Structure formats: C-alpha cells, structure tokens
Length: 264
Image 1 (cartoon, rainbow, N blue to C red):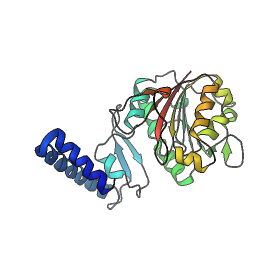
Image 2: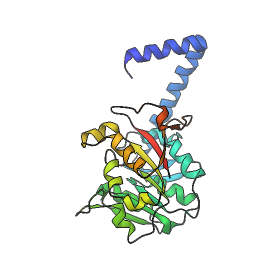
Image 3: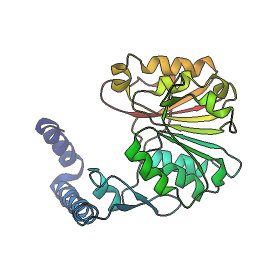
C-alpha cells in the first residue's frame, strides 16, 4: 500500500471512529507487528522450522522453509487461508477422497486428516523437490499417498495428468488446486474426473495464468463445460469474506489471487 492509500485509509478511519479509534488501530497494528517479529525470530534466527498453524481442527505443526517471510504472521496465531480452512472443515467427511494439487508443505492434507478423512484417501501432489521433501516429512506419521511431479494436461518425465493418476487410484470427491498459473493445464488433464463432478477449490492467479498464455475465462469455461455451479471468494485471506455467484461480480485482474468453489 503506497503513502496516498495509507493517508486515504487513515482519513476514512478518523471519519468513522474519530481520533481515539484511529489511535487504537495504530497501537493494535504495531502490537501485532511486534508479535509477528518475535515469532519470526524464533523460527528463523533461532533455527526452528517446525511452525504451529492455527486451524479449526486444532494446531497443525509443519516443517516449512525457514526463509518464508510469512512465518511470523502465522506462528503468532493468524489463520492461514481461513476461508479454505473453514470449507475443508465443515464440508468434508470420512467418505471423501481428497486430492491436494500443489500441496506445498501439506497443511490441507493434514487438516482433512484431522477432520476424519482416512490417510489412504488423501493424495498430495508437489512438483518442487525441496518443498516435496518437507511435505513427505510432514506427512510421515500418516499412510497417505504423495506424488513428486507437476500435474498437467500431458504426461511426461516430470508431469502427470489427474486422469492418468486416477486410473491407479480412486477418483477424488474433493480437490484443492493451487498451482500458480497452471490451473487450466491441470483441468485439461482431468476430463474423466470432472465428469464425475467432485467439489473443486481452485486458487486463481490471473497474472500468472496470463504469463503462461492462459486465462481465467478459459479456466471458468472448462468448468462450465461440465455444468459446474461456480462461486468465488474475492478475498480468501479474510475470514469475513463471502462467496458470490460468479455471474454477480467482476473477475479480478492483474497480480491478485482469489478462490473458486465449483460444485456439480
């Protein structure tokens, strides 16, 4: 946020809450930043990289990259992706088969396990080797499936399609996809799965899609091809954000991300 935007925000707060309200927010902001700094120091300066994350199902401890700049924020108690956390707590049960595409360190795989999904029904996919090693370490106490490679629309030396993977495994009932611009590629390799209408949660990255000669409209069209009902959450890191029908709002542009929920 630039200085002009900060000034406009300050003026708006003063108009609504007066100088006393503005002062309280400033103090609260710096206290929060102090908590973040202290937590960040603990998990980076002092060499510990198993970070506690708050979730609706209780604390989840993860080995993460110690250079990750957001460590302090989440170690201090802020909920990681609260909208998706809530969805994968309230709308999942022991009958579900969960595919975690772009699993990173496995927080959502561990979350659904805490919420009653049996280990053998959890499948995690991660392409980056260092991240994958931490994923395996985090999932070591669970008998889950994990795959090292990128999910795409074609099979290759380091890629796999969801349809080819599902030939050897059960079809998913719930998918979480966060692949930073490769959303369309993942879906184009999943026609068999999409025809079965699992619930999908997709983190959309408009600029990254564009950088890969793809677009959010093409991703949405792919879902509509299979008669999905689509809702979006424009600020999925704010626990007060609401789902909106996709035809009731404008799609974000540029270097932002947002969450799609698609139900058949």
